[in-house]
Length: 398
Image (cartoon, rainbow, N blue to C red; front, side, top):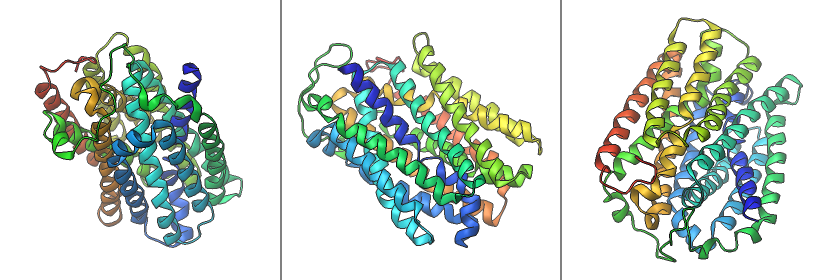
């Protein structure tokens, strides 16, 4: 039965990734039809991220009360409903309103599942499960490209993904009996006893933990880089490489394919290399990808650059999350991961719209230089975490 539960978790991660790349791939078309400026994609992104921050910060309390299964099922259901609302939206304010339940649902499932996997499964599963997020995120731009070229419009693309999300949500609801022991789990993946049912951890204790703030900033920087690339890759290629919106939507999905394939490989690499080593290697690969998209106006190099950036992003997020229980303690892991998710979504909330303002008013082709800033911040914060936690018991060797 535990193997079936793992399969359900895999499906949940696919459902988490499905909506994430829709806005960026469709926005060049949506912008014109809605009659709003280019930078307004950042407003929708901010609303979504605000919801995810709220639900992530509440995840410790919600998961301890209802269990991971219920939180996951309800959250995926909320995102499915929000996507259907998107598919019928023909005014900007309607999309901004539908973004609220989408954000709340995404943050709930993200924090709850990441903590469950970090506590109960090995590092390779964390990478492979986040690879499933990449499956969802890489499939949806193709769905949107199909909808745009086949006359269904961007609304049709959202509707197709909404139907898929509803099916996945139904599967998770049917699996709830498999999660029934979640709240009373007594052993982790290594057979060590957990501390049992406890009260939620306060924010003072969370932020007072050595290395925690640097870890949160690292998450902020990572998602700033990832989400900015995700949202603006299509627009950057249209401006920088002069390609059509339909082709840009298809090529932008290659970034997610880079993440997906990188995480599939990373699952095997965790058997040989530490999280610290894999994170550093990922940062170096991201730097190489940024160099590729800086090279003047060569379409093949730009596309290759986004794939390489995706490959570099692959190990960073899952490796940091998986080490959280051993880095900060299993009793604090859900609360810590909740704040990590909130920090990540703050980056998702502010960095893409800030770049939208830069692109709209200053220079659209500034994308690679914008990404360099967050890459440098991420690298510095990761090394601070390594130094501040060097005396801790490190299951993940970081």
